[in-house]
Image (tube, rainbow, N blue to C red; front, side, top):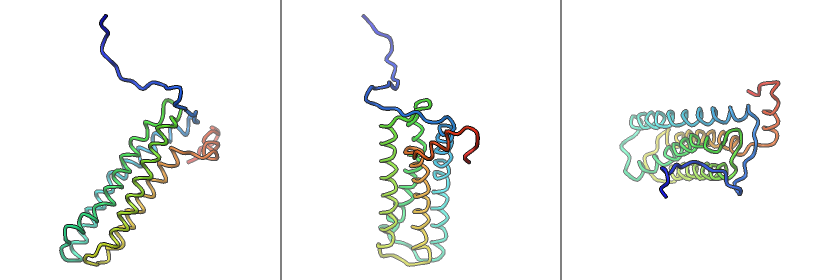
Length: 173
């Protein structure tokens, strides 16, 4: 007996708990993660290019090791942006799939950890010192913490947040 083509689709597994969310929160989840992910995806390369340009004006040429270390935090911010864009997969209709949200949260923590370690490496790697040496890691730390905070709020919402979004009578934002 021949079967038709195999179609892959997500199936609800009995051990895969899903938590219902308020409709307003679901709309903000879908739009907020995309807006923040695209914002980080666009601004990180622009900021990196701008800071490299200003850094080339202010100081002499950097050695290859310093150049690699300087590129680590923006790469982790880009990974965080991609994680935010993929966070929409945590939703199944108006329900949050707990296992997917947990893996997305772990990815967000790993990306933020990479940004923090990369920023710390910039401070410890010897190289030409200019005014951007300590400003640049702060910029990427700010971008990483901002993306992490937005993503964490959506994949692990607090009870108070869900209650605020549950009240349809007034807008939260």
